[in-house]
Length: 392
Image (tube, rainbow, N blue to C red; front, side, top):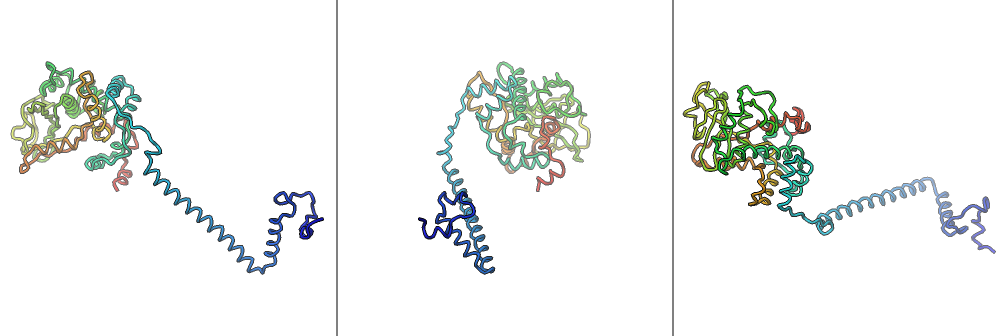
């Protein structure tokens, strides 16, 4: 015997057809059929309103779910940021003297990948950093992207380390009785082994290693080599451009201030060398012989820092290597990454507050040499349109 309600809902068209829920004429099926009959008997306007109401309910449910997901995600991200050390506990690696020695060996042997990896271990490069405001203005003047100063360790960093090592080898070869070479000795050796040309020799190599191998050098190239050797010897070097009365440049000189405190200046073009500063805060009183142009002469002093020395990660690596090597005489780390702005500030501080300080700035020549080199990434060279876009 069947249930009295079943005879109204029994399938007659296809007895073998599947039934909802696996049970013939289930209560769910009867409810759906019953609701459908009610819906079919509704007036047209009521049916439209009921359909719209259902759609609005569905959209409201979806919107509420999306907002809930966004809120949950935001809370989760905030929580993970606050407690990331608990969830992602990666131990901080403490570099050792062995790492510094391996880094130096890798640079000497030309193992770029190893040297870059060890540099990252010794002084990890931070996320993109904002360079000093002075360096940003320098990029504007030269049409170079500031990414040069904020990028992770790369091929250009490795070339800088190789250059510092080459300059150190030259400085060590000039040592006298175990002490650093004197400024006069540096000028004497360079003038005796290279021919100086006022007209230059085309595009200048970006690498100091290549410059040391050149026989014929421009004035700027000679000034760059002398400054690099002086730096590795513990001295301070400056490139001084002399101007005549009409503000036309007439000569490029080099001034070295030794660790002992004495100052030696030189005119690479004539080979003249003399004691004392090129510039004492006023017009040049006794310019070297051979100067052309109308006096009185004045001078502008430039800091001959290498391009990668402006980079923050290079400065951190240099300090960390010095800490790790310490007093170990077996490892002599070449100097690089000395902050240029700090050097300018320290130099200006040596002059009386009420006196006339010399005009000082950053030397563009190393930048221009690197920018024209095939080693320099083209995306970092700003075209006029891109240059204006980055400025604004």
